[in-house]
Length: 412
Image (cartoon, rainbow, N blue to C red; front, side, top):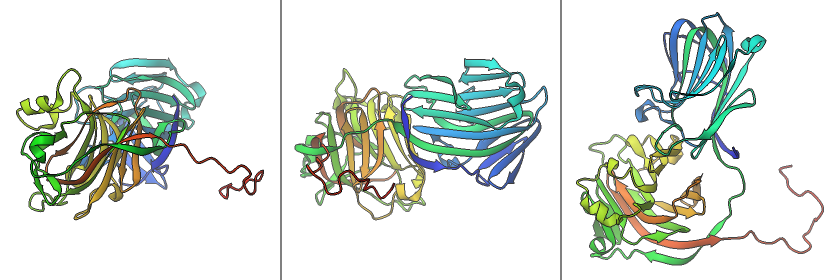
């Protein structure tokens, strides 16, 4: 799997209070976590907020360094990647480290098995899971045990990290979570001819927009999309393109403690073989489930009462990237300059001229509609334009640059 690390989001130190145990004694020692289980128990990583369902995953690389400190012939240690605590049955990936056998599962399917590690059983073990788009790889001590691709709707790249212990004591020495991307350069682009400019005239709603749920209102050169509604531009666009606009969430202090929540942006929305505006008009309501079978990229900024921002790809609701830090959430009374981009095999999401996400898609969505979903608060949109984009080559160096032949990179 060709990948590169973009950003470290957690670790390598194991942080106090990020773990919850059941049937296991947890002892924090420095930057490590000691787990003692004379019987059966489990431990969950709580770094991703419980308020949003402990949802981790996406295009990430998780690296665990652990050591078995007490082992018997009944010992069993299981690492569950991308598990869902509330879900019946198995989910995600399971690495089973037993007294006499190592096994790897994706849900209920055995992907790999090998004999006991012998004398190295009690040595530190390095376990890595990488999920990127619809591909995955699991490694142990630098060896690739399994790799492959998942089905679009499997959700195997989303969930929480869980540990299961049976008659074993384990020390978790480090845990690192990193955002990854496809290895290789991504070409820069520039805007060229405009494909669409929204006038925001009084009759613009009926003429240019297809909605289900409450209709948006037009005033002061802007459209305000009402909560519980989905609205898309009637024109359908082919990429590569950039969709630019200014967005402002409308505060709702009566119902939400964060006042602003769930500013949702949609692009490359399509329903092959069907007319999207007619499809929306025929829907009985604007529930999210109605959109899940469609092709689209979508970002929910400040979702779940402004606790998380996520980029997903449909169909299948595949998680691409998640943020929970304050910088990537909504602020009250702020207007955001947003750009939604489709460029070759990549989808990009920009805020205030800063790239938040660049996602590689092995089966990119190259055509579709742009739109907005106002879920639990209203959303005001201004200055909407769609532009064709094309490659922008880096400037050529001068024929005889000053200092040629010397390393002038101060970074070393």
